[in-house]
Every structure is written in structure tokens, then in C-alpha cells.
Amino acid sequence: MFLRQIAPFNIETILSLLYIEWAIKSAYEYGYKINKVTLDSLQWKDDKFSFNNREKGIFVRPQILYSESQYPIAVEPMRKLREYRDRIGDIYLDVNKIIEMIEKNRLKHMEESGLEYMKKSLDYLIQKGKVTNDRVNILDFWGLTTLYYIVEVSKHISGINNYKIDEFKDKIKLANEDVFDISGYELTSKYKGKELKFRIYDGSHIYEKENEKYKKEDKTKVNAYITLALLSGSGYILLEEDPEKPSVDQKIREFYKEAKDKTGYDILLLETDEKKLIERGIIIEDSYVEFVSKDKVKKFIDTISKIYGI
Image 1 (cartoon, one colour):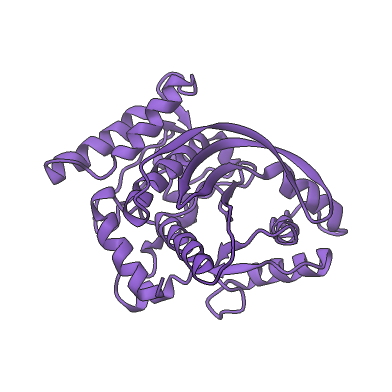
Image 2: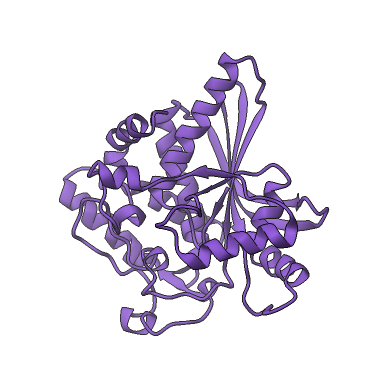
């Protein structure tokens, strides 16, 4: 499970898929049974957007790893987005700018740009009537694009070619017995007879409801980790950096602690330690959020697999 305001980063996605394959193979070797694996990405449309926050700004001005080029793709000009402090879910992207970004990268590489999977998500959203006046919602586009990127990465990791992507509606039950409706986009496929399910959906209503229930003071500040603690109590594992590490922001540590204190549940972690990649010179300090294009995926998968030993 990811907690990301818009979508998980490509590096996290690659790492999570490698972990999934490793878990399935390890279970088989030790005689355990895994019938289904579900990877959820929880968006947060009600969170405030800040272009100065690199983890949010990258989705309105994408940059490809190992490239100097940046592509503003939002409907609003960058000068306005620098001052924008409203909901992430109210931001729209310009379809023509997205297509231009894909095409410019294609011309640079002379063949494929490595971003063709983004066009697939646009085509799907156009078909579903979710593109109006050449505008597409930031959560719809990047949510669906994440699933198409998972397809590209899975081809190299697991050899998966058969898959289905569509909208879904479901319910999710937390450890405290609270049940919530969820809806978004879902990718389903099979690997070694196991059902793989990847979902991405907005969790704003869950964060806010559980925050209101457990926080007695300062209810205006939503601690989404309260929901994650309750999900961990239901068996979900969060792909996140260990909050005990010195590099983790103090505010995040406080959120973790408050979530444990309020709910009684630890947040189960599968660490996404970018420091290993930084130490090996694969990425620099701020580039972990950049996009890994399709033409670099195979090499990047092999490198990450060796570094993490999976």
C-alpha cells in the first residue's frame, strides 16, 4: 500500500513489484500459499497542493530521470500554480501538453519516447468521457497512468502480458470494523497462478472520518497515518521509509506516533529506502520522484534488484 497525494513514484512502483515477485517465489520455496496479492495506492484529493513541494509539483511539471527537460502540463500557468494552495483534486492537466511531452521525447529518442504508456491512459479516459475541452483531472490521469506503468514494468519483471484495466467500486474494512466505499481504477492480472490486483483510489473520506473519530484536539489537521494504522491492523503493509531514520521529517515521526497512540496499531512497513540508490549514484537526492521512461525500465529493474537483493 502507498500513501501518496497523487500517485506513487516510478521508483517506488518498480521496487514494490520486485518485492511482490520475491514474496511469491519465497512463499513457494518455503511451502506457504499465496492466492492473491493486492497493492493499493491511496490518493488524497482534499490535501492542499503546493508546487514548491517536489513530491506534488512533479505531477504538474514532469521530469524524466537522466534528462534535463521539464514539461509543464497543467492547464494553469506555472506562475499561478506557484501560488496555488487549494485542493489537489481541483487541478486539471492539458491533454495537448501531455501529448506534446510524449512527442518531444519521441523525437529526442528517434523511435519510442518511453512515455507511450501515458497515451494509453489518455485514450482510456477519452473513451470514458473523462476528458472535457482537452482537460483531464490530475488524479484520473496519474492514477490510471500508474497502472499502465505497472503493466510495462511487469512485462520485464514477471513476463506478464495478459491484464485488464477498468474502473472499480468496492468496500474496504478497517481493523476497527469501520467500512468505507472506495472507487477508482483497477489492474488485474495473474502470475504463477496467483491473482494480482493493483488499485488506485482517493482515500480523503477515510482519512477525514478516522481523523475526526480519533483526534480529540486540532481536528483541522488531518493525520492520514491514523487510517494507515487501522489498515495495518487489517493486514495491509505500507511501502514507506522507516520513520525512525534520522532523514525522516520530524512531523512525519509525530504523525506515526500519534497514529499508534490513538489506534493501538503499529503501521507495518516494507521499507522503500532511496538512500541505497543515492549511495550507489543511481539517483541524486531530489531525483527519486522523477519518471523512469519505458526504454530505461529493464536496466533500472536489474540495477534495483541487485542493490536491494531481491
